[in-house]
Length: 88
Length: 88
Image (cartoon, rainbow over all chains, first blue to last red; front, side):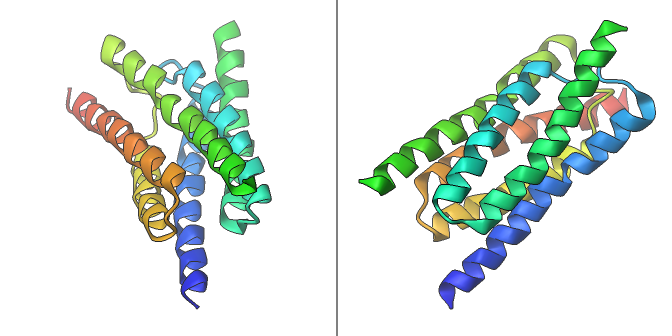
């Protein structure tokens, strides 16, 4: 039972750290502006997220696994836009 | 033993997602520029990080606990600068 509460807490935590990327993605989508965003941040972050994803799978921790998969999609979009806006 | 390897993987993952904030903090520190950063992202993210921190403590998971504490410090700095640069 205690483990169930922990899983729920993990899911809520994961929901927040994951959906947090949505307003950033929307902001970039709308403005096409990424000047103050650090490319290095999102590259390092995404690599870490890939490792967290693997960690979640190996530890059979659903909250960590699913959250990091979604985060990876959004941070990849930010990296894509950052690199593209640099070309302009 | 398998759990030891997992802990090491967790620490490496944590190191990347945590140090990823360093180049963003440095960039903001140097340029004082936060226009394309989403305040909502870092507010939601920081709240999620606080929950991950609690999750780490309750699950006695050192990698998650320590990583999220450091991340919180850096994301708080970004929020502070974002709010301040808005005032200008």
